[in-house]
Length: 229
Image (cartoon, rainbow, N blue to C red):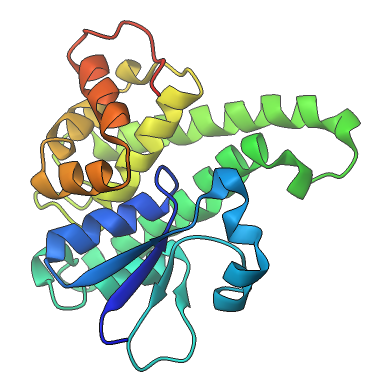
């Protein structure tokens, strides 16, 4: 296989990697593995990625797929310097963002909320853990808002490999019914990113055009409540 292959479940964090592939213009092929249908835990997929997660990226000439969203995004943008942080401080800030979003918000927030059984087998604890997860998400959302205040993009004046990941989490906030408009800077950020042609192409290819339309309707006030599909 001479092209990149992105193993992807639309609506998950792997949507950020899909957007970046569209941004770079590099040839690639999508291989959809829907989490909601259990396809990432199938024997066939576990032979590809024993972690049973998305994204995974097949790189020509490599025996093993590349896993973990930050690593996948970093590789995808290797030949697109305009999407990469420039300078040591900016590179460190990119790693800071990735670690916080994937390690704190994703794991201690949405992972705990949606995959509670991974953290405690005893279902008697799940309700309390899910309540705590929602508090964790809100705390993270407040931190993201503060970090975006006064800047158009995550790393400053230029759109970068971090920004599509932030769109995923803004959308997830709406999915769980959070009032995301209270985060003014993040809402402005989302309004800019949903207009990008690469974002629109990726979401349409993943069957998420309705969701993107709902986000747009929420941003401009046509959708009063955060009830996106």
